[in-house]
Length: 278
Image (cartoon, rainbow, N blue to C red; front, side, top):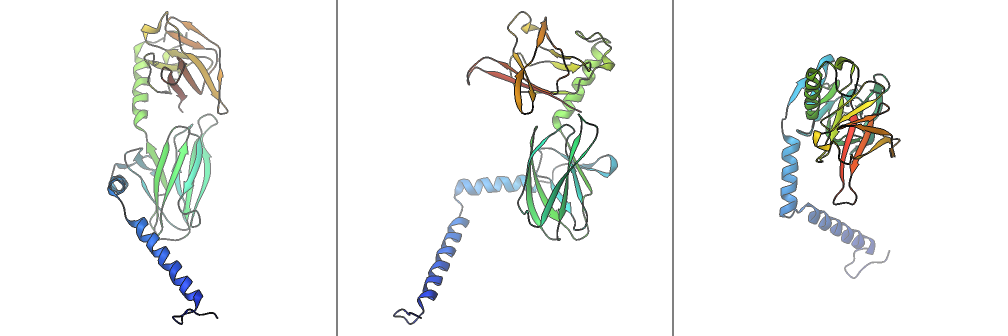
């Protein structure tokens, strides 16, 4: 074997040089500048925060969505059932350790209001990884831990916007026995719609009688140009027929998800999203 003047084989010298380079690169990667250190500190505080954890029906462990990074404890030979909001559609599930953690989807509920469940199984105890779940409504950032014997059988979430939607539902039902625009009693209407986005004409309430959808705008919109309504179907927007009755937009079918758009161009366009709940 060819040797250097020092008497060491050239392959050994090359290996030592490569090892030294790797160690130097590793040391450089571990050094954080001020912004990186601050960012990891803030992220660590959020991940380590205790947050609010409570119990729900059927033995569910309930986390308040968005307050903290939930830490979900699972166990080998057991399954953790993570239940998402009914009607929420999962786009992607990303797990840090895909070798020792398995995630499988399941569903429950009737069509139109089904809830997606993520069934999580670790292969051994003492594991820690992270999981990101992107859906049609939000993004979940979760931590997964495996324990030899302890585990959370059922996990679900409480959503801050859900309280506001339920209050709006109650208030709308109490306003009158018959809601303007729909010739049926209020108790026969579905008010479970979520409205998101900012606009001067943001709807004050949305409801359906099962055949038509009614979108109530502020009274200031009466007589003015109404926004354009696009129904979302198969991930695409399509214009649908509707008519205005004062400040009420009446859509001749039961919508599940739609977008209201006013104005043109990036700077002047206003957009409101409407989604039907459970």
